[in-house]
Amino acid sequence: MPRPRHDRFDCSPGCPVEATLALIGGKWKGVVLWHLLQGTLRFNEIRRRLPDVTQRMLTNQLRELERDGFVIRTVYPEVPPKVEYRLSERGRSLEPVILALRAWGEANVLGLSGTSTHRVLSGAHC
Image (tube, rainbow, N blue to C red; front, side):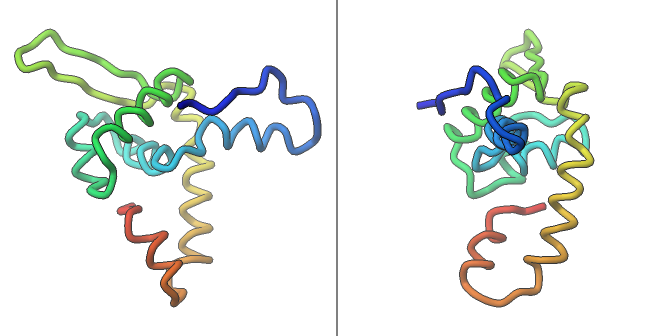
């Protein structure tokens, strides 16, 4: 079930942050966006890069990214159908944000010991 959406994000100074996280904060969205920064990918190419994601979860995350204008889904009339995903201009505008998240992760998460760190990194494949 999708998260409820706010009608307005002018309630406090933190609301733009909340709004952004509501749009890109899904479990796999950030990693999908990271891989799409590299270029156009087919569904199974994305799935291979994220072996811990289920087909249903990946489909839902891609649908949400498409609905929110970050990803463009192109279906080619072939048998079997060929479907490609690429970033829209809006999705490309997230590049500095995603690169900043990656840099922060490299500086603050990688190299730390502990099971919680391993669990967080095990599914990322960035």
